[in-house]
Image (cartoon, rainbow, N blue to C red; front, side, top):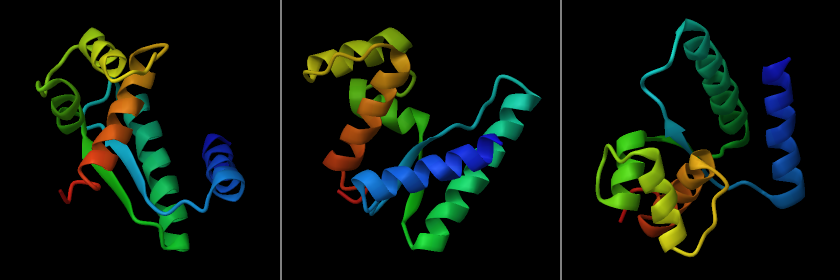
Length: 115
């Protein structure tokens, strides 16, 4: 069910706020366990299939790339990511939101890695 809900969520975002023209996501290479790796794989398959069916470019960005862009350090700790978002005028509620902000800023400022 989680993958169906994810598909429906993507479709709703596309319908309500879209159209989605490109997707960048945090590409995680290491997982806390087998179950996490399986869920990540299922979400990746769902996302890439959804994007491919609609002709939406979809690309993963390595964690270190996002951290380096935000803080200057590819292995920055969570608190540094939060501080970097705050320094840019955002008020993230946690490190996950700070990571999302950093990814958005990376995509905008590097034109998706092309600049």
